[in-house]
Length: 68
Image 1: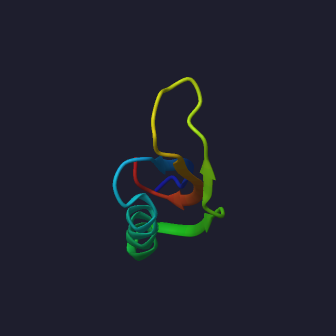
Image 2: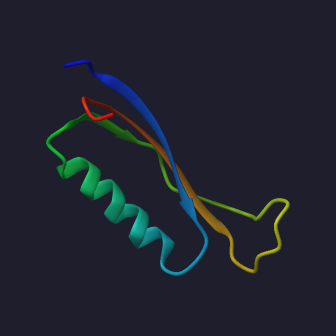
């Protein structure tokens, strides 16, 4: 099986963003086909080129997987 390195951007600005993103990371960590999971800090950023009253929460992660 070929192993793939994945880089994944995470983010959102509606509802309970931070708990949902943390849950997504938790689910990735529990997946037996995902290895070497690394996650950045979570950052709040102002909306850019979009009108929104809510700031965004953003993060990024990388991992190795056999999934395609």
